[in-house]
Image (cartoon, rainbow, N blue to C red; front, side, top):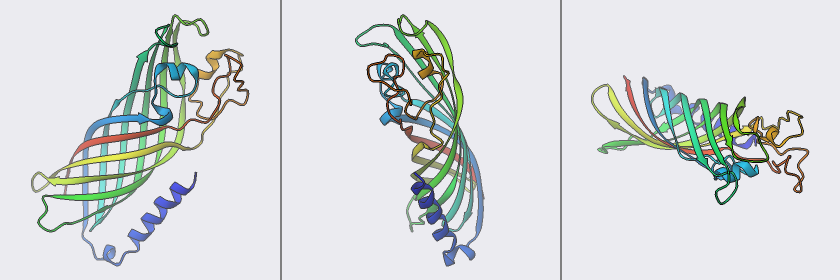
Length: 247
């Protein structure tokens, strides 16, 4: 799991040690934007998957963020703070038994190197980058009409995970101080700090009270109370547009 962090560190070191960096002009940008977030693998799925304990069952959501860049020629150090919300609703048991409503809120803090390619006469400047990140999760689940859990709303315990990711994008000039940044990022949000938290009530509801991205030690395929049988990945792709202001 630490391989992604080592890769980001190596990428950063190679760029910093480049001879061109020490001779480059320093630039500074700040801006804000938003976009769409697509959960996939275990982070996606359906509400039936969520109720079964195999996936998180979330659908496409949105992101808003603030972003800053400190540039040294082609090399830039990028920091970002963002808020993401993902939701979904549907049956708890196929085909149409009960109802589950899901909400997941994520605050993310990211930092990492980015390299800008200055293409002569091109209207856009492409870039590639990598980052490490801290993600703070808080969710809410509503159950209705399901015999194995009580009807009502539960608040999912706040959790922190460390992750890593990579991105590509293009920057388009909108004037002397303005630019539009169109980008796409992949994030593995729970690379480190996975865990399973058990409220020890002996009820199925325990499986939903925390993020629980690690397997339940008491998992039993014949049981309807301990249902998380494997670690679950938290992955997402984010496509954003950001208006940047700076020198």
